[in-house]
Image 1 (cartoon, rainbow, N blue to C red):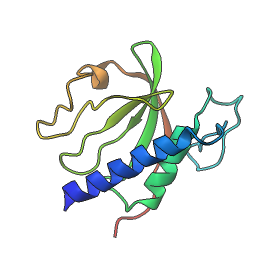
Image 2: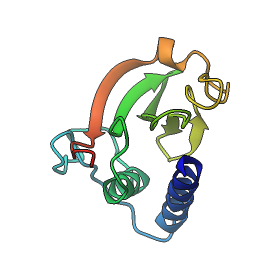
Image 3: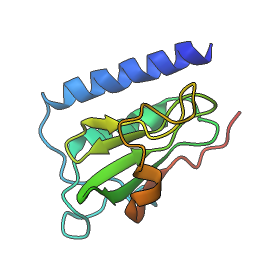
Length: 136
C-alpha cells in the first residue's frame, strides 16, 4: 500500500512539473507562515516549488509531516523535501526543479548515492514550508 501511495505521489509530482512548463512563472513562493513572500525578500522563487507545495497540501498528511527547506549545497541553492515514512527517500532539487539526488531513505536508508555528503555539508538552512496538518 505504501509503495502504491508513493508511486501515485511521484506520478502527480512529475505531472505537475510537466504542466509547469506550460504556465507562466510564479514569482512568489509561500513562506513559513503560508503567506506569499515578495520577490525582494527572498531569492528568485519558482513556479515548480509552489506547485510541489500545493500538491503536498492536497495529498494526505505524511508521517512525519512534510517540510521543504532551502540550503546551500556545492555552492548552489537547493531545495530539500523531507522523506515520508519508512523507506521513502527525501529529495534535493536545484532552483529549476530538477531532481539532484535522494540523500537518505530507500531500502538501505542511504538514498540513491548521488549526494552522500549532502546531510553533512549543507549550509544556510531556511525552512520554506511545513505541513502543520494533524495526521488522521
